[in-house]
Structure formats: C-alpha cells, structure tokens
Amino acid sequence: MATAPVTPGFDEGSATALVNASWQNAPTERLKTLLSSLVSHLHDFVRDVEPTPEEWLQGIDFLTAAGQKCDDVRQEFILLSDILGVSMLVDAINNRKPVGATPSTVLGPFHMVDSPPRELGADISLDANGTPCVVAGHVRSMDGTPLPGALVDIWQANGDGLYDVQQPDKQPALNLRGLFTTDSDGRYWLRSVVPRHYPVPTDGPVGDLLRASERHAYRPAHLHFIAGAQGHRPVTTHLFAEGSPYLDSDAVFGVKSELIRPVVVIDDEVRAAEFGVQAPFHLIEFDIVLDQAQADTRDMHMVHTMFRREFAALPALVRGVAAEDAERLAVVADHVTFLSGVLEAHHRAEDVHLWPRLLDRGSGKIAPLVQMMEGHHERIEELGTQVTAALTAWRKRATTERAEALAQVLHRLADVLHEHMTLEERHILPLAEKYVTATEWRAMAGTSGAGLPPGSMPLVFGMTLYEADPEVIENTLSSLPSEVRTLLREQGARDFATYSERVHGTPTPRRSAPPGPRT
Picture (tube, rainbow, N blue to C red):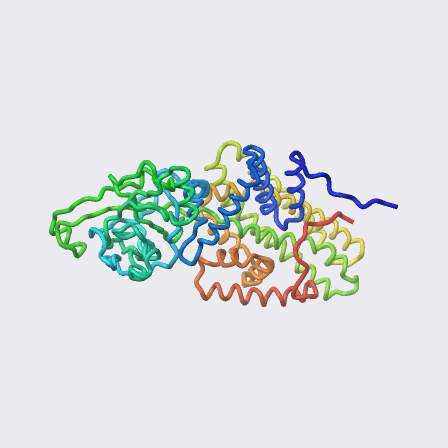
C-alpha cells in the first residue's frame, strides 16, 4: 500500500525553507517576495538572539498591547515604526530626491483628520496657546518657477506640545491645522504659534519600550507640511525651529539640516502690515521646492495586458473562420489590421519619447538594454510586415493553407511580443520611473493616441481598461477633464463590449495569458 507523502521534519536548519515554500501559490510575485524576505529575516533574528519562550511571549504581548492602543486618533504601530527608525528608512528609500528639492521626513502619527481649507493669512491657532508667529514662504519648482495653486497642508502641536486629537475635550476641533492654496506668485502665509519641543506619547507600549531602553521621548520643535502641485511630486516634510532642544537626538530620527529655520523677531510696521499683525512679531520663513513627478508606469502594464490578451487570441480567431464565410473573414481580418495599427502607434511613441531619454539620462549600462528593445521593435516590425502580406493573401483567397500561414506568423508575433513586453517590464519600466517625468510619460501616451485611427480612442481605452486595476485606471485618467474621463471610461466600456461581441463572440473575452506552444 502506497504511503502518503509527509512534510519533511521541521528543525532549525529546515524551518525557513519549509515556511517559504508555503508561499508558492501567492497570487503575485511581489507578495511572495515580501513574505519570503520577512520570514527569512525574522528566522535569522530568532537564530541570532535565541529568545526564551518567556521572551517570545513578552514580544507577543507587546505587539498585542500596541494594537489595543490604536484607535481613530492614535496609531501606536506608526509610533513604534517611528522610534525604531523604520518610518524614516521607508521614507528615504521611497523619496530619493534631486539636490535642491525640499527633503521629505516622517508623516507622524497625528495626521489623523483632514485639514480644513483656510484663506491665506488665516490664524490656525484657535486656542491661542503659544507665542504668536507668522509662517510664510513660496512653493517653487526645481528651476525656481513659482507654483501658483499649490496646496500646502500644515499641522502642529500647541504651546503645551499637544495636538488637537490628543486633547479633544480641551482644544477646539481642527486646532492648528490648515490647508492653504498658494497665490499667483506661489506664495503662502498664515498665522500660528511658535512650535515647541514635546515628547511623543509615552502612555502606551512604545513609551514602555523607550523607558526600558533609557531613551528620551522628545521631538524638537517643528511644524508638519505636505505640499503638492500639478505635475510635481508631493512632499511630506517638517520645518524645525533653529535652536530647539533635541535637534541632535530626535526620538523619531526625523531631523534634516536643510529643514531647520530660524524664528526671527521682526520689528517693522510695513512687514507687519503685510501679514495683518502688529510689530514686533515672530516670523518663520520656509520655501518649499518640489521636483517634477516621475513617470507612473503602471499604465504600461495595463497596455501590455491588453496586447497579450488580444494578440494571443489571433491565431485561433483566424483558424476558426470557415473558408466560405466572407463576412466573418472580414471581421477577423479587420481586427488583425486594427490591432497591428495600435501596436505600431504604441512602439512609434516609445521610439520617439522613451529610448532617447533613457540613453541621454541614464548610465552607460542602459545602452545595451535600449539596443535590445530597439532590436525587438525591428523584429516585431518585420513580423508585422509578414502579417500584412499573409493577411492580404488570405483576404484575396480564403484557403485553409493561407489561413494557417497567417495563424503561424501571428503566433510568432505573439511569442516575440510577449518576450519583449516581459523584458521591458523587468528592465525598462523601472528605469523610466527613475529618468522620465510624468509630463514626458503623458506626452508619450499622447503621441501613441494621436497615431490611432480617427474616433477609435474610446475603443482602445475600453480594450485596455478591461482587465485594469481600478486604481491604475483612475491614475491614468486623472489628468484629463472630468467629461473626457467619463467618456473614455463609459463609452470605452460600451464600445469594447460591442466590438468584442463581434470579434470574440462575447462581450467578456477570456482574460490575458501568455501565448502557448505553437501548433
């Protein structure tokens, strides 16, 4: 009698491999990578420190207490991440900025409510707890261009070092919070109070950890900012008050020297009048410099998914046409021609907008990758020429042999296209996110769209959005006027359903898959 397979023994040596093998059916490679890395590092930590069962349980209790401390206005896990330096490390990795752009820093645990829109010059200190001051500055692009209409979200603690959400029964709601829009010169200004240093909350497990390790809990005096403008990357940052205690030992490691500003006493009636205050007054000036938003290449994955689905289906569509069915032949042949035109416009846009920028801005290591992509385009163009020739022959005389010849070249095209897109996603799109701005990326999409047959844009969008992530759809359409977004989303879906019914026999064709073996 056969013996059922058993799981290999779990021991110190096999533990990590066994657990990581359990992630093999994770739905995405990214999830599998995250889980496997987490387990590997966690197991290495356990092997390194060899915790006792009592220490392990104490750790579990600590995490449990952190979760129990969280509520609508308190996030103990963010605070834990902050004091361990994880928040700043994640921020540093995800916000690598060019020299001259305002550095980012941690969000902090108290951006728990939306800041209310306020007029320029408004006083955000509703409890008047602290030394009055004016905060003013400009929001500019990297080249010094002022950014009118930029949004500047500001929040801070009061004179007692506490935020409104920490004292809901004492401070007015939305105290020391405001969302401001820069004027035509990119300028913002408001009235507030001079920030002061304060401790992070220590009444929970994070406070217990700080005390147990004999670390102080204090942050230097600061204001929080989130600033953003059209076509630019938003920045989450701080303004630190020069001379504040703890600038050299911030409990959450958030201080950067470029963010420290003096609090100046101004005894000038003219300048006081500009801000609607009396002289002398305290002034903190803080200019914010935004770098241009980089390309979000998720829409390219969306386009690739469409190409994989539609090109993989072509050989079967051709083979499924009866030799005597001239009407069906015309539908499938027109579909092949249409798809080929969409692909050609897409690649032409990459040739014009993408490859030259990567070569110009990247390192020498990029050149072989771009040359490989250009070679793929040439091969795909050659196959496209073969498709055109085989398609023309099939249209003239629909024999089984001619249909098979067309199906074979379409299969070769789908194979090469799949390989090209896979390598582009793996090697090129990460480079595009690094070296190409969002504006340039949209220009490439515009060039691709301009190359489409007149009136076909909604249909192409419908084909592309069919399998797309809703978040990616919204991001892709976000720069368009609302009526255009509605047209592309709604009419595109209708047009594709109608078109797919005619071509595939169903408004909901089979989802994308890489091309299978040629038959």
